Image 1 (cartoon, rainbow, N blue to C red):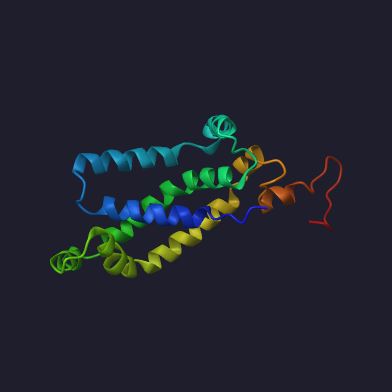
Image 2 (spheres, rainbow, N blue to C red):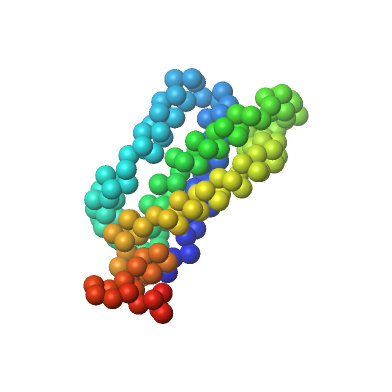
Length: 170
């Protein structure tokens, strides 16, 4: 069974993306285009991309592997993480960032030393929600895995038989 490291990967990449998109490092048009693209990805129901995910993972030999399942879970939770963390990073006062820039902090150091400590409660909330989204994802785990990379919800579902429910083993 998979131990689902995808929420942490999505949290790291999503918070970095939200930090860059929340500030004026990119032009307005570029930021808006990226945010609309992320929102459109989140709007699609997961069943729409089930067959494309399967064919791509099959082409690269990642079906029934934990790596393939992590990639799918990251792609499902990443838009949510970006949108949720965006609001938290927008609330960080820009004066603190300007002061850090005057002190010679790089972009990475401003993220790590200034902004991230201020958004830790939001990061915790986002981590909980990302874990719940990844945990509750049943469709892709059932489609893309068969024996080697089952998640716990898929493994529990195997106890449901055609004529009986094996409650003791569940």
